[in-house]
Length: 167
Image (cartoon, rainbow, N blue to C red; front, side, top):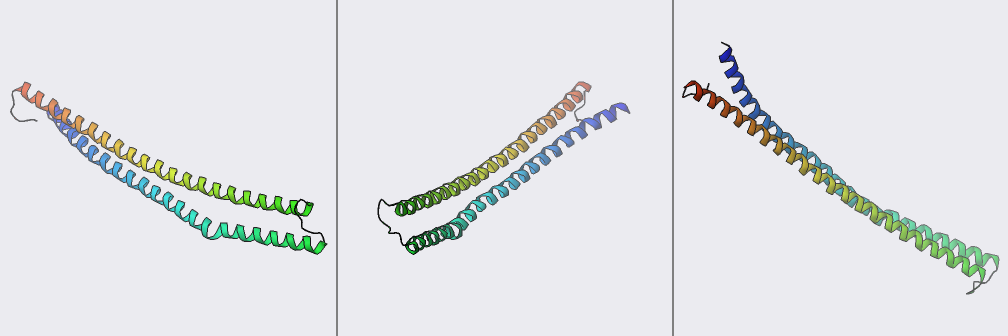
């Protein structure tokens, strides 16, 4: 009776290993698909963020800067001071224009860094997904090898017992 139970356990081990292998593959594929979806979302965020910047934020910044410069010119002219090259009012206006140009350049740079960061995130998520798929495949291979080893052990035991059928 104990021998029959032991042989059944070996056979059940084989079945368990095959089921575990199939499950590992399915889990690996699922995890990869989750990471692929997250990567697509990160890429889409990059596209959307760039569109928001180019269609709304940057034009608003440029408009605000133009308004500020216009107000500054009006204030200079209201004060009665002439706006001449080399004079203090001219130099202040010029410095403000340089600062505004720098703000636009910094804003463009920050937008590009953010875009690159989101693209890199998507690439890392895709790589993580491929890793999960590989992990599932490797786990499945290990389980198939264990299942094969289990069958070989049962076959060897049957041969030693003089049986033609694996039990």
